[in-house]
Length: 257
Image (tube, rainbow, N blue to C red; front, side, top):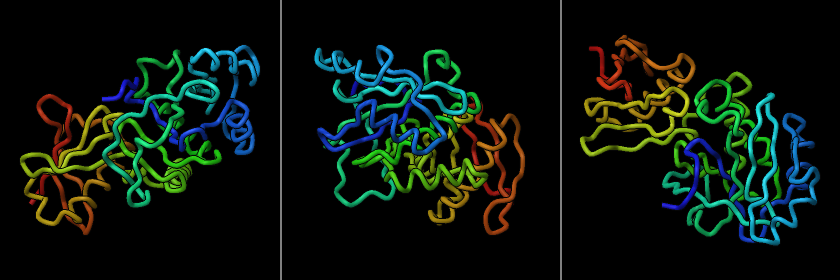
């Protein structure tokens, strides 16, 4: 596994040699008007160049909704390591994240330990969406789901969500079948502390199981972690039974009938 820090981060992937410098980042932030680059190394955009000449990573502090995030891996320093990302959304066939360099967004030091607190996750996603206007950006990597996402798609789903739409499960969460035939999420736990597990009895129609997962992911992110069993309406009018696992780390889903 690559040496990357922070399952809670998000990376912006660029072709080799095309990562932005602090000035480009600041210009993009100013153009969007919803975030800002609040601190340059040494106090101004050009100050990071001497750091880059010695091979160090160049970073700035970005402000979103009053919360600060570190943006690391800027030119002229070294790029940030990319995490593994086996799941992809809306990227061209043959796209290989290993062929790219990264700039990474991480919660600032004062947020460490509270990454799951609202609104850190939405703010981090919103900041990444705002920076999707950077030239030459090839993909966005959402670390909690290990997902690699086309910039236009990422910006659209996050903007819709933050504007009051449904949670963008197909992108900020990954779905995979596990050994016993169940479907399990990766990435919901970043927001709720619990992943979702669709039990094998519901997996006869994988498309229907995916629709169930998307509906329940939105419910969990909106309402928070589940601490008791309950029945809930699913797609196509189906009634589902949801319950926390014994260790509380999963929300298990069966048919209620």
